[in-house]
Length: 382
Image (cartoon, rainbow, N blue to C red; front, side, top):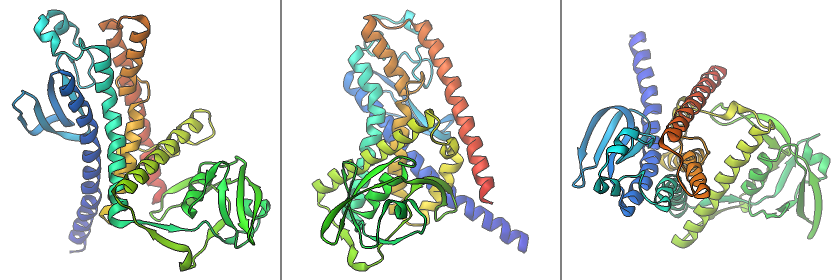
């Protein structure tokens, strides 16, 4: 009986991670591909396939315009395939393109005008950013946003805050040129500013005081046991309920707040990637499907709204990743189009095909690296 209980418990735990993972990833991928699809239809490019997942088809149907909508067996991505494409990454089918009639070329992605092709490609990441804005706005409207004033309650002895001259009761008003409305606002700046001096304006006894503080890079554990390296000052927030409020939003305010939250996620991710490229940030936080699955299960345990928040954050990450100028990704296509605009003519099909192969190798290497990171990460947890 003990063995049976362990097996049932393991199965339940697996579903607890798998189902939230599939929900989050499918939602994000669907909207990304929907962006490509809608703009392609709008610009007159014929869509052959709209696929969620790769590999063998599990089920699907054809719409009245001949597009095959399908759910595939490997749910780690998706694609929209256009007329004239050789593969799911919209690489040109050279032989097919050469045999196309003038009528067929009018519905082909490869022969569409440059602005149309650029719009179709850019629509995927843009759809991801719009999805994030919509999710954040919806959560803010339904649940509101709990806000704690940026009031200093306690200071860790010997910390960066202690060295900078913070005292309990200080109310943080600005950091550099950014106004601070909540403790979370302050945390967000400090976390990504390790070893960087910050000019902090606080209100103390009715007067404004200028301080300079340099957050220190430290490793912490989140509530789920994940290890994170972030900048810290050594300040504890106020636990006084008088400093806690719940902000409610109307529709327009919620959209504005959702856009601000999305922009924060974009800038935070871009800042991390930039620091990683110049060697100031570790690659340990790069995660793949295994870590996404674990994180999805962790967030699902906090409730559906928390899971939606994760979907919004993941949507931003996928949108940014796809804008990286690597052939095969959307950013690689946009790079080709920028070259085409400068040259006055597109790169030859053979050159694009070579670029796609190189891009595939780079993306595969990144996926393998991320998966290896996941395995090492999970091993460290237990």
